[in-house]
Amino acid sequence: MARSPRSKPAASRSAAELAILYKISRAMAHQRDIPALLNEVLDVLETEMGLSRGTFTLRRPDSDVFAIEASRGLSAAEKRRGQYRLGEGVTGRVAESGQPALVPDITQASDFLDRTGTRRKQRVAFLCVPILHQRRVIGTISIDRPPASSEALKRDLDFLKLVADLLADAVATIRERIEEHESLLAENRRLRRQLGDQYRPGNIIGNCSAMRQVYEQIAQVASSNATVLIRGETGTGKELVARAIHFSSARREAPFVAVNCAALPENLVESELFGHEKGAFTGAMQRRQGRFEAAAGGTLFLDEIGDVAPPVQVRLLRVLQERAIERVGSDRTIPVNVRIITATSQNLEAAIREGRFREDLYYRLNVFPIHLPPLRERRSDILLLADHFVRKVNAQYGRSVKRISTAAINMMMAYHWPGNVRELENCIERAVLTATDDVIHGFALPPTLQTGEQTHTALLAPDGAGLKDLVDAYEREIIIDALKKHRGNAAAVARELKTTQRIINYRIRKLQIEPRAYR
Image (cartoon, rainbow, N blue to C red; front, top):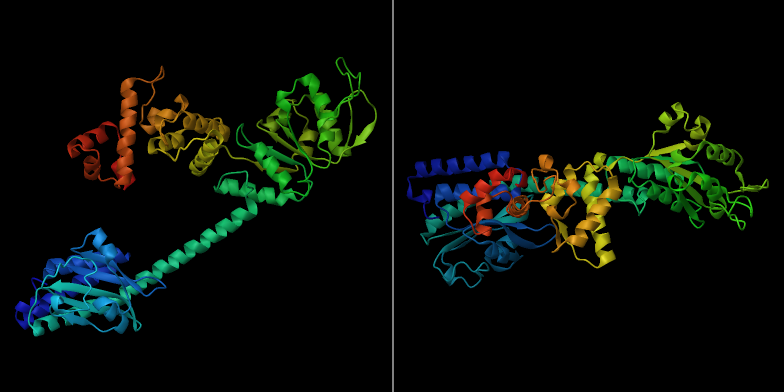
C-alpha cells in the first residue's frame, strides 16, 4: 500500500480506516454479484490507500482449488494462472490454515510461488488473510506493498483482516443465493425437459405455450380412437400433428394414409376414398382399393376436409356412423377399422352457415379439436425452427452454414409469415443454397422479407435491389455483429473495424442502429 494511513497520527489513521470500511459496507449493501462487489472493494482500497496490486481468491464449489476472482494490476492471462490448492504457496497455506501470513520481502521467501508471474523478483512485502465463513475458508485477500517496518506491516495486516471479516458474510450469502438460483434453474430445466419428453413428439419443433398445449392434447387423444379435427392456417404443420397422433397410438405399426382432399378432382374423390369396382365408370379397367381400405387397422388423414363436395360429405357421414364403406359401383358393404383424423384451414362454421358443409358431419368430425397457432403468434419459436431447418438443409445438400446473422434474424422476427412454418422452411432452404460463406445474411433472404419499415434495413426496393441498398445492408450487418461482440461499445467496434469512433457513430445514426440493444 503506497499511501497507507500508517503515516498519519493514530486518530487520523483510524478515521481514514473507518471511512474505508464505511465505503466497503455501502458496496456490500447494493451489490448482488460477487465479482462486482470484490472489484468495487478493490476500487476503494486503490483510491483510498493507493493499492498497487491486490487479489481476491475464492474457493471453487466442491473443490480445494482457490482461483483469483478479482484483482488489480493483473492481466486476464495472469489472473488465469493464479490458482492455488490447499497448502500450495503462501496463498494456499493461508487457505489451508485459516491464519494470515505476512512476507516482509518476497525475494527472501522460498514458498512464495509468484504464480501470476508479475513480481519478477521485485523487493515487495506480501500480505495475505483468509476470508472465513462459519470457520471455513471460502477465499483469501492478498496485497503487495513496499517493504516497511514490522509494526507498519502488522498494522496493515490487521486492517486487511477487518476487511476480510466484513466481507465474509456478504460473499457467502451472495454465493449461496447464486447456488440456490442455479439449483432452481437446473431443476426447472430438468422439469421442462421431462415435460418436453412426455408431450412433445419428435417431429414437431416449438416450445411456446401454445405448442406445449398442442403436445399435451396429442398425448391426451393418442391412446384413444376418437376422431380428431386439426384446425390451422396453411403451412402450420397439421399433417405433422396427425402423424404424431398416429405414431403415439396403438395403431403405430399399421399404415398412416394421407389424402389432400383439395388436390383431388371432384369426380375422383369418391373413387380415391372408397375404391371402385371394374367397369364402375369409364376408365375403371379393374377393381381398385380406396384409401379407407389401404389404411385398414391404421389412420386415415383427410387434409382440407372443408373442400369435400356435399355428395362425398354424405358418404363420409355414413362411414363415421357405421364404420363401413361401399366401393363405387358396388352395393357390398365392407367393414373398416380405421381411425379418422381430419384437418382444415377453412372456417367450417361459416361454411355451415353458407350451406357448403354439413352440420351433422361437422359434429362427427369435431370430437376432439386441436388448434395449431400461426407462426406469427409463436415468434419465440422462429429461431428454433430456423436453426432446425438450417441443420436439415445442411445435411440434405452437404452445406456447412453455421449461423444466422443478426440482420437476418431481425427480418425473420419482423415478418408476418403468411405461409407459416412451410414458408419459413422454404426461405431457409433458399438462403442456405445461396449462401457464399457459413452465415445466412439478410440479403440472402427472399424479397418478401425485406421489410424496411419494420427492420430499418431498406435492403430491397419494390423494383429490386440497388447497389446503395445492398452496401448499406451489408455494412449494417457488419456493424451490428461487431456491436453484439463488444456489447454495444462503439469505441471497441471502431478499433476492430480499423476506423474512427466518429465514423462509426455517424454510420450507426445513418443506418438507424441502436447500440444499447446489444449491451
